[in-house]
Length: 236
Ligand code: ATP
Image 1: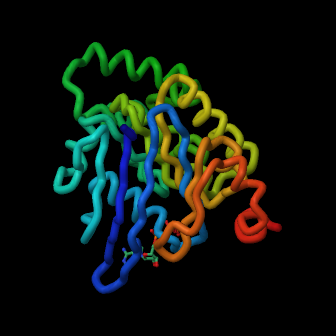
Image 2: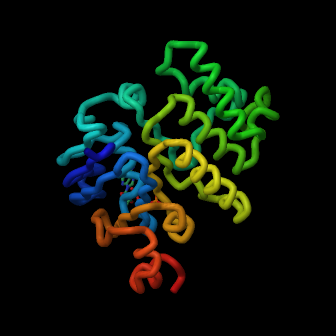
């Protein structure tokens, strides 16, 4: 059984048909990436899986159970967290308070404290800045904060939407190293990226999205060597 099964997903914004029958699976322990150009439907797909958008048709199943009609916060309690495009951290709040917001579905305060320790170990820079407001952090640090916040719900599936967006190359490398480390520590990852080269380099499998449909899929290493993928997404 896949940890996440998406079948024939169709999502509209009014009359705009943004996702046109997308199907994909994520197996436990994998890193799966959705790559594709601007507007291909990657964010719409993630936001629908997370319960933020309602599909007109299709199936979304997490650990064998349908998520359709389940509100986003309940989806988080079931073990799936989204780190959204643009980070969306609470700029006026402290780093620590942002992280604690990520644990809003959890009731055991000792366990939440353990998770906070784990996030601070993983992101020492957040520990150094725990009392600072998030708005004073750099872009890379805000990305780390958004990822740390998502981890505070202890997800079994972590969904990341464009974690490398707007970051300098050295920080992109750092963020990808962290994604790898989280995966090595047992988290299954669904990654949306425009940086196809980096995404394919850490993923097990990939799906290429074009104008709301899956145009290609397979082993990430094979796709990275595919001529069409090279031409369209890896700069030739
Ligand atoms: P990006 O990397 O730019 O986020 P994407 O692959 O994630 O691209 P989506 O953001 O999912 O693509 O957009 C898919 C399609 O839906 C695009 O045609 C886009 O213009 C449209 N779209 C996205 N959000 C909205 C919205 N709120 N209202 C109307 N149309 C939208």
